[in-house]
Amino acid sequence: MKRSSQEIKKEILEILSKGKSYSYAQLERKVNTGYRSIVLNCKELESFNAVEIKKRSKHSANGRPYFVINITEQGRKFLQNLRNQ
Image (cartoon, rainbow, N blue to C red; front, side, top):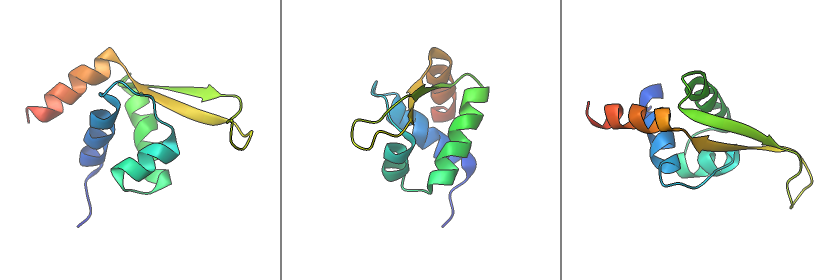
């Protein structure tokens, strides 16, 4: 069964609320959805100031740039509202 965009966003925020930073690829595996879905949902959450996406210059394993996603205080409040629905 296909999950709604809201369910995916809630899962992303739940994972990030534990205090650790994650890359798009790590979130893809944790949420069990496609990479493109993770990127689009994270960008939408960023537009609501719920997450912060930072570009890092080089990954230690392959030397390519990558992104790190963190939850914001606004994101924690947003998650609490989603939990209460």
